[in-house]
Image (tube, rainbow, N blue to C red; front, side, top):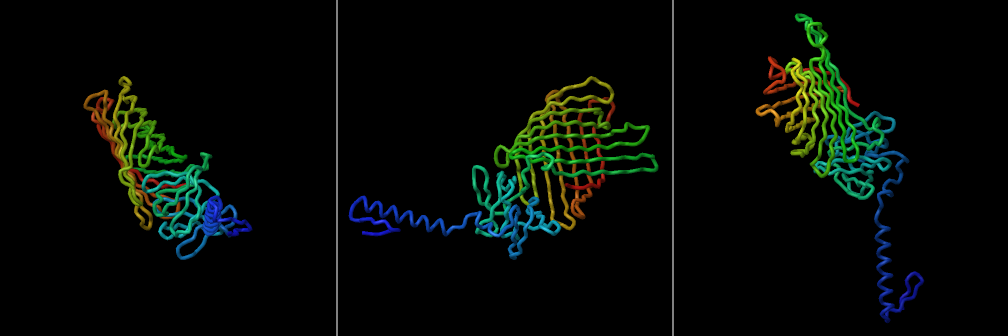
Length: 368
């Protein structure tokens, strides 16, 4: 006869033996669960509504997680200015009161809250349907998921100015890059323009407005939908409207490099500068993007893309839009950029126009 918590069990009978084993199993399970700390218990002592950051040197900060980008965390601590911390120096990171959109170096995407773990350098991602524990150093990007588009919008805006006394030409240029990230979608709007203040030339020399939506349907793979407007007076294009659908893949991604390629099908409608008939043509776009980031002082970011368009309606015609942008940030959120652009069209739509156009642009701007 055995007594467990006031219950008597006779082990000599089959039913009694079964009851005895069941009671022992429940007792061991209770001891095991009690010994383990839950993610919520690790938040004991953290002020309500606050995120917290613990470094490997045991410094502890309370405040708000701003973002993770290229292996660095931007954290807004209470009563202090924003601090930037490398992920390898973080012991614990928790943001249990907001959902975040997390992307890893392997290309996985999560919408989850962040909870601490008992393993230094790891964080627990608690989503609606799944729970994952990941190494912080494997996070490629993280930002708070905002349902409100205006609160979740980020990007940069820059302006430039140039004047040449010998030709009495004044040029103004403008660039913007806006992004909004949803669960598995990323929406982007990019614009650039060069405007000339001279009576003898056409005021709006160049313009490029691109709106795109990309959907990550599996790790490292995405669908892209693009709508684009172009104006290139030098190559005979008064206006060009492009709609495209494509599929792309990340070819190489680490903390310093992001290289991807996309291919699809597009339709373009051109209005030549010489009033030739408007044309609608089909093309195959091959879009190659490359980004290189170096942790220097100041931080340097190099972005390049080469967009090839192979014409299906006009045999032998192909186009290239190429741009390289060198950007550095001498102080927080203030950027200086130098941009080189090159456009080529083997068969320009207007008669007696150049097959290529190129130039450089200097811009000053800010990030938000």
